[in-house]
Length: 279
Image 1 (cartoon, rainbow, N blue to C red):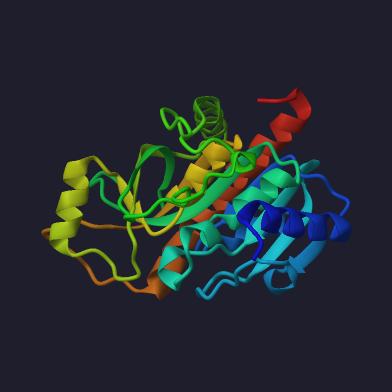
Image 2: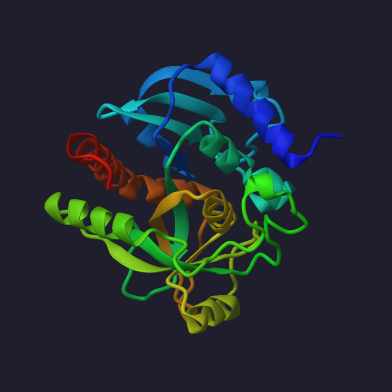
């Protein structure tokens, strides 16, 4: 049985033989945020089921393709659909694509996620730039891994979200007159949504938004040396004393409210990166 490092090399080798493009930026598109892919001039679209050792997405709104192309002249590789712990995958499987994108040469990782708002000042359709996270998934994608070729076993997590990228994203949003929030993302297992008491607890812990993804990918991104930025689409606001019904259809619809602004910010960041050099 192949180890994780060998599986990464298998998948990366297959993708190199399928596309000559060397990405500078990896992009992970979350629930209801696949519209970002429309900004990509696609050179190659590879279904997940063709890639060795790759999982397959089972979630509505996740198409399941790896896209190679350019945005404003910047080479990117983008996941059109991601994987989640609640789908039954291990966190090593969930984060496998992050390792692949790094092995292909990407230096920056941009993650888009849909999440429920916990901060009472937030509104559905807001964009939150993640500044820190709380891992409440009860597991870690690095658990059990000791292969130093994959990165350090104990990566430094003082600044899992790149400060310069956060500042850059905020400046771009301001220039585009797009309001953004800043806050802490809490990751839970799912797929059930939060009760009023759980919502109250999360807010007491200091979380501004809650979701079922992102944190495992960021942990692995730190291990492999990515500089990472996460933009969250707030799909609803959970007020524990006035909880409203929420469905996946509504999550996708409300994520779509933020999607054009998220796309504008990412596209402009990549344009400026290509014009002015490395961030």
